Image (cartoon, rainbow, N blue to C red; front, side, top):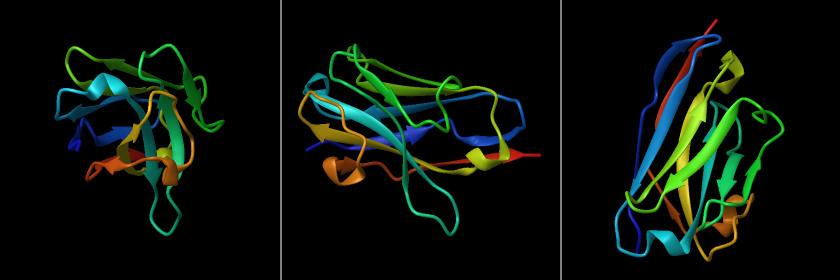
Length: 124
């Protein structure tokens, strides 16, 4: 069982940056692949970024590629999402997810545990 707690969301102007963090409980964090998803009002949840257990392999949605970086610190049981050059269309609730297994995935149904989410709002 893994519990996930996101933090770092907030209100930022267009072009600004935020770093989201997701702290995981449990001693087996390094055996989970991790992902970030987001859901904007009236829209379905969508994939943002994913990282393998080792941190070597990462995937990004086309909409954030080049602007976001996912990373993890297994010693701290934490995964991060650095977001730069933020746009109003990045406004959403951002969710952290953990997947049993070391290989990352981009579909939400492949993840087993979810955090409560953190709100990101980008003003124009």
